[in-house]
Length: 239
Length: 300
Image 1: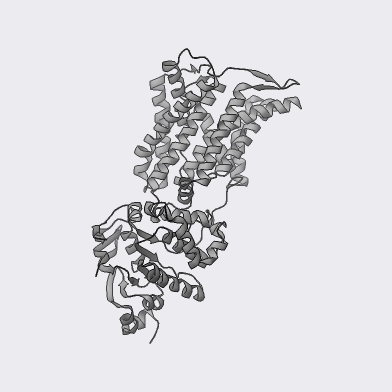
Image 2 (image 1 turned 180 degrees about the vertical axis):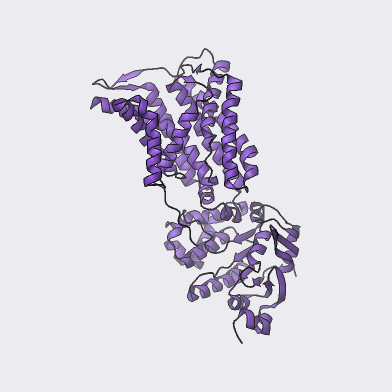
């Protein structure tokens, strides 16, 4: 099977603190892979290291090209798009302006902007109603939708999704996860998902890794991990 | 009443020069959260580039609007070049350093330009040649409109319109405003942050360069310390309008230009500079975010 992303021995240091102690994992083409774990496990750091937003050691290979420590805008141009944590939208810009920034580093998606915009409106009808609103006035869920839509406008080959369910109401969380599945199934986008909501994430993942204090503790298919006793006890709150 | 109108005309002309300089302050602050203290000196560089261009390449030129525009364009290129050099070699290496380091560097660059300027151009004032045909237009009732003022006002207005378009209608402008909200997120989603910051310096510095020539046209005695006071005042104008806010900078500058001429006209010209600083103190006391600025609420 073709591998979109291959990470080997990835290490990140913040000063004297080692946030990632050499982790290795793979994201096969066309799949959803999750990294789950508690606060401070190193999930966001992993995504930032991959997308060129913090210095790292180790080997990261994207579409058979090594990309370790490449600049973030170069990676976006190649189709590796990071959808940041929480409210990763620009609240001082309108919804439309935020979406237009989706192609800022992705030249190949420029010609398809209007087509992709229409497709985003199908996924997120709410954004179409609010297209001229300032993004800061959107609800938390709508801002998350906007962040995902902006990433999709850039036609990602690999989408890095950082905590898309963070701080959202349960119904909205459900909707967001449905949309992630649709993005993967209908558009064929490979997804690397980072989540604290382990249950939902495992349900939609083909494969998943459990991260704890900078190391990979466990790995397996989504279904395996859902039934794993340790995972159940620690991350799913079941006894 | 006639006197008031005359003061208003003079104030608008002065204010539009301040506005061109204030825009550079506010744009750089928007993307880097840096008060670029060297900006006033980039304005001075514009004046001198204009002066030497005239001396070397068109010493016997007939004053005309076209000449003025050519000199302005050359000065814009000159100032932009200096701005780019400063950004690349002084500020960019400090991008991740604590803010105080880059602030002190800005003061250092400012001193370098001022005293380097004295070394190169000499410390004594030089005469800025007449490049604009001077005409006084009589509006009746002892109100005069100087052709210089009209030109200053028109050139500033056109440049500000172009800037407004760049900032609010283009991908560069969107990227710039995105960076002003969060440099980190902007980088994350694939904005080439260094490139946008560099373009911001180019635009800001070239506006200052244009202002430098207009200043030379209006007050034809220039020296390497010329940027000090107008630079400070443009900074005050940017703070008054709300630093980081493009529209605010223009409004702040016009208000400052008007107040200065009113004070000079009705009270005493001795107090015109004091007034600018009084305004700064009042803004900081009463409305620290400025007229159009928004308070930043830190979410915890």
